[in-house]
Length: 289
Image 1: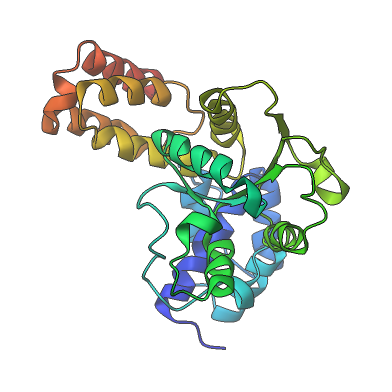
Image 2 (image 1 turned 30 degrees about the vertical axis):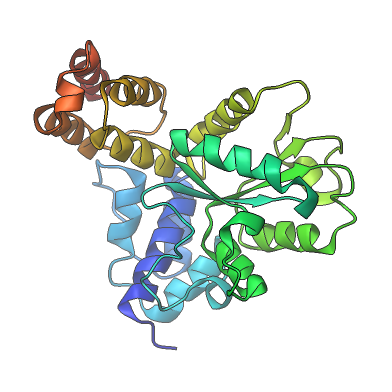
């Protein structure tokens, strides 16, 4: 089938995002199996290398390779360039799977996650009354970057929550579970779990954010999100909080350094926040080594 430019871009991004977690020998072996070029002279990042090698790939090879790395083209790629309105621009997209009776807890988590650059879809707050709710849920599942399952008692008995997890597993997304009275079960028992018992919402959110920051499938996206948030800091306090988040990231692109330096010059809330410009320059120096 012939792909649209939008679909080709989507597939290249998904392939690069997933394959960059592997070693260069395995990446090259995979590319060769799909009759794609490789290079022994590359000195940049794996993600950029993959995009370059995929540049002239035939449509069907892109589809087949995407399937190989766990991305189902038929189910997940849509021709629309318009992001669903329920996602916050420039943030990591996370589907919060929960029981309807616990929508208040889910909404609190949704609000707290925003501070860390994570936009959550909570079905019972994000679906407009006039929208077809099943379609909205499917759209959220097809466009999210990860899923969090809030395991309250009765979670496993719900057909909907199990289907949501199955959808996310089919896409190969990272899935985290949160114990809120029920233990992980079945396939989700092998995913990273968090214990919410006795924890404040902010503490739990920070723990999950740290997991996204370190997870091989989300660390690069999380780094990109945090750099963007820092650039658009609206107050001195925001700039100080966000530089702290940047100091702990594990994935760094060379372009981040120039963006941080430009943000110091362009954003008075960054340049005027005590100690922040110095910390940003120290971060640039650290990653230059």
